[in-house]
Image (cartoon, rainbow, N blue to C red):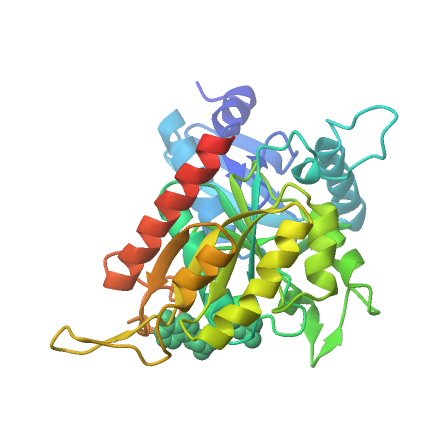
Length: 365
Ligand SMILES: Nc1ncnc2c1ncn2[C@@H]1O[C@H](COP(=O)(O)OP(=O)(O)OP(=O)(O)O)[C@@H](O)[C@H]1O
């Protein structure tokens, strides 16, 4: 016989996909009524327009059908402001569990020294060399390898990750907690989410470091991430310095084009990383050549910049990525204009690079 207890037990494993916690644990299941094999219930969402409603409905209905329900009458409700504030406090409480007594409390264990998350800052000397493209594609490739991955698009004035991944959704804000947006199995947080008509909505003022810290302290990343990639503004500005001081354990990947001048400028970004004690994982040479239909290569932007930079910084040349646009169409599910498909030649280069990066990071851990 169906009982309320059995219903709650059956729903214990159904999670709110954004928060990654059980609906039962978060007290989101209400008003359970049972008549024979018909179960009626209300799922109280964090916000009424929750974009993941359909997924939650599918998961609840299939869990209850597996329990023996023939009909499930599901209604959705939304939390009150007080409930949202309580949930935000609960999530934050969960994030403070490993504070060390006597030390400045870190709101988010992701920044804690013991955190299992590997930070990789992607830098470049000049703008326009493909730093954001590399960030997005490396993140997706790591996710394709089964890793849990997040991106912080900290390129404050040139944020482009939401466009590159075709994210038009805004993050859910629960009280004071922000949930990243997930696309292609990558959790994304971008300054672009909070800027309308170039007027910052949540973060005001020129306190870039504070903004970056907010991305760690106000954002609930859900399960512990394996990799958090940071798309930094080009050059050696304040944001790069903030990252160096805030995340001393962060590693770096330096992106350059093959042109000697680009590599020369990129060397400065790399040198700064070295001076501040950051380990350089390697160099990525983007736009390395153009491959003609007959298979011949044209070195449109010169040659050798990546290898030279790797030599200067005494690190590996992780990958050389040729020129080529991803072949994606807006009609495809999960359409992301700047993400190369896994089975495309450039998609394969990114996958190989992700394997190299994972291997390097995991052998060091
Ligand atoms: N391998 C490539 N082949 C062809 N186009 C590319 C390649 N890599 C990047 N691009 C294109 O070059 C442009 C610049 O790339 P991207 O925005 O990633 O550079 P960026 O270094 O992050 O620039 P900024 O720091 O100024 O934001 C984009 O239009 C991108 O689609």
